[in-house]
Image (cartoon, rainbow, N blue to C red; front, side, top):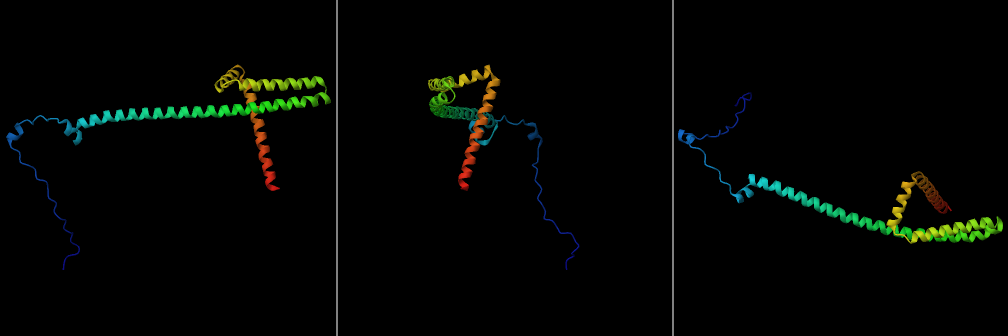
Length: 188
């Protein structure tokens, strides 16, 4: 029977054998290393490391250039789409302004009858101003309109902010009443 309290024997690990040196081997200087460019590239030598740094730099600059070109293309496409949308918006706005001018002009006759000719002339004058604004808008390119708006904002920022707030308020009311009207139709 074996002793159960005895420690287990571990297998022997062979120790590395060191070569024997003689005095002559220590006195001889090592030979100059030769550099083979092909071997260095494939074996991962110093030249391969230097090459990798250069090619990584080249790859990085090529990637940056490709990203820059792609960004320029996308910016160009976005600008063209924005101009297209602005041109469509300009056409719609001029149509709405023309319709508004017709409505004001039609109402001028009623104003003449109910309130007086002087107020009817004011209404016709307002209709003419709206119609003239529509024609002015129709005759300009989108870039010219943007430049005019920028100039207006520079000259009178307070009026521009007030106008933007008023337009926002009106649009919010229109949208809210549109949604409220849809809710009423669903319930009915």
